[in-house]
View 1 (cartoon, rainbow, N blue to C red):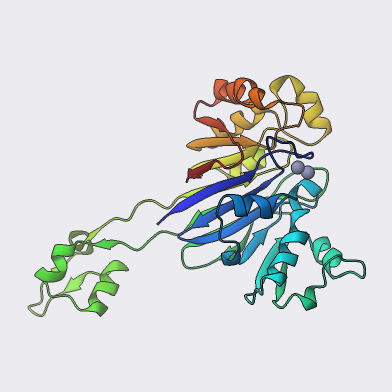
View 2 (view 1 turned 180 degrees about the vertical axis):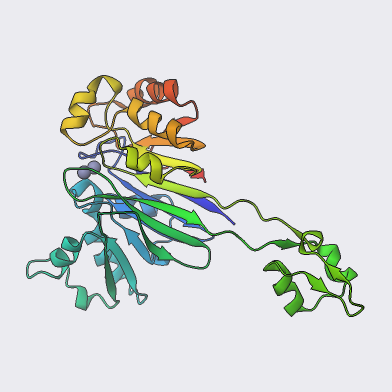
Length: 307
Ligand SMILES: [Zn+2]
Ligand SMILES: [Zn+2]
């Protein structure tokens, strides 16, 4: 199993020459999922070698420009490149109205592929996507407009069979499948070999939470409990708690406290206000976060990490 996150942009509101606004690609076992799509997203995907055509699901946290203005260009490019696969967009229902409206810059029915809108809801944590290996949950947060974070949770993998047991008991494919799913082995002489003797436990499932933009919330702390990695916005340094409250954002110290209380392994912060110069991201914002929660890293564009 592989589970990686590539940061395409970790700034807020205004793009700068050092960082673009929010977008990231979560790749699980070669399946890439796009999370938010700021105006620079296509450029960054090209720059970092992301296979854009392989993206089948896009998750948009909310309809502020720094999280979705890149969608128009991306959809248009998919059309120009002859995409045929369906594309699922998980977002606020207004996005569908916008893109299907009379004055939409994109004519969805002329793109050559199907766009399927999946509306987010905002009253509780919801399972919004699943396949054989992963589940994605939406997590309502508190921002100036309806907003959701997302949690990517691996499903428990099947057990690994001990290779020597295959030859020892001359196991058939059907027996191997049943044992990997947890069955014991019943031999013809009446003997039963317990599953624990035949298998090795798979690694524990991993999970990744993406939380932006929001006030610091207890409900988020609950939702992300036990996640391996938490990406949480830290728009402001700790002296600007009042400003954060006023604009429905979070400070470094608040994000770190959430990570600490939730017991995550690692915190990545992002969505910095453009008031911070490039050097202050590490020297101020990252340092403040680490004072509360040691295993914290300030994201930068192009950064990749394993969950
Ligand atoms: Zn934002
Ligand atoms: Zn916002």
